[in-house]
Length: 365
Image 1 (cartoon, rainbow, N blue to C red):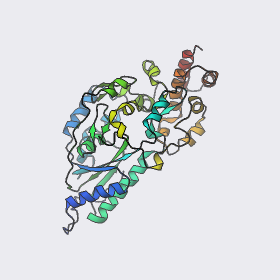
Image 2: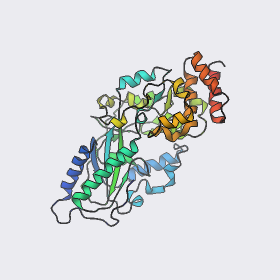
Image 3: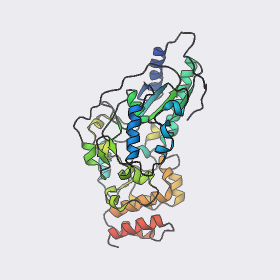
Image 4: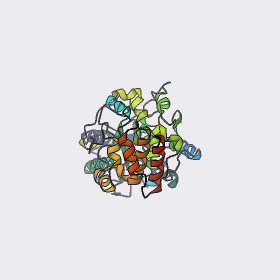
C-alpha cells in the first residue's frame, strides 16, 4: 500500500484547466498504458455488499479466515479505512499464462501437480502495486497533490464489489468477477482517492441459468449461486487452512496442491479469456508441469529457493508437504509414489506424518 500524500481533500487542478471528467478519462488511458486491461471508478457506497458479507460471516462460511471480520466495517466502508476517501479507482490485469485446454489436460493427469495458475509465476502483489503507484504518480503530476492509498489484495478491501461498481464486470455465481469479453482470469487492484471523480456504471450480470461452476466444484463449496462456503473450498483447504485437511475432502482434492481453478475453467465466459502479456505471470521453475513425486522430493531449502518471489511461499514448507501427500494418496499406485511417501513417513512434524499415513493407506500400505 502507499502512503497518504495529502490528508486533506485536494481539488483536481484547481486552476480549472482540467475538469474531473477529463481527468477520469485520462486515468483510464494511463491505466491501459501501464498494462491494465480495464480501469473504472466507483463510489464508496457498499451497503449491499456489506450486508452480503455480514450474512456470509454469520453463516460461518469464513472458517479460519479471521481477518475477514477483524476489521469490522472498515472493509465495506472505504472512508473508515482511509479517511477522506470519496472514490475508488479499480483496475484489473490479465494473468492467464496457458490455454484452458492445457490446464484441463493437466488436471486429468493424476501424476502431475496442479497449481492454481495465478501462482505459477511471480507474486502479483508487487507488480500490481508498482503499476498502481505509477498511475497515482501520473494523476498527481497532472492534478496536483491529492490523498490516496494503493491496495492489492493486502488490506480489508472488498475488491470484487468495488470492481463491479466500477463497471469492470459482474460477480458471477462462483463469486469471481466476470466480464463478457474477457472472462475472469485477472487480478484486481485499487486506489482509494479523495478526488470527486465521475463514476462508471455497473454492468448487468450474464450468468443466466448456467450452473456449470456449481456442478463442477469438487467439494461442493459453491453451496448456492453467489454463495461460497470457504471451509469446503480447495483454495482455502490448501492455502489458508493451517492444520489437517479434513478427510472428507481429501479425495476430492485430486492432484490440486495449491489452489483450484475448476470453476474458472468450466465457465463459458472464459472462452473469451486472453493470455497474459506480462512475462512475470508466466510459469517459473517448471511449476506448470511438475510431477507430484518431483515436488514432494524438495527439501525446505529447495522449496524456499524455488518459491522465492512466488505467492506459494506464504503457505510454508509443511503445508506444501501436506498438500502433496494428499495428492500422492490420490495418484495411481507406482513404485515411485510409494517410495516418495515412505521416505516421509517418519517426518518430524505430525502434520506431515498424518497425511503421509493416510496416503499410504490409500495405496494399501
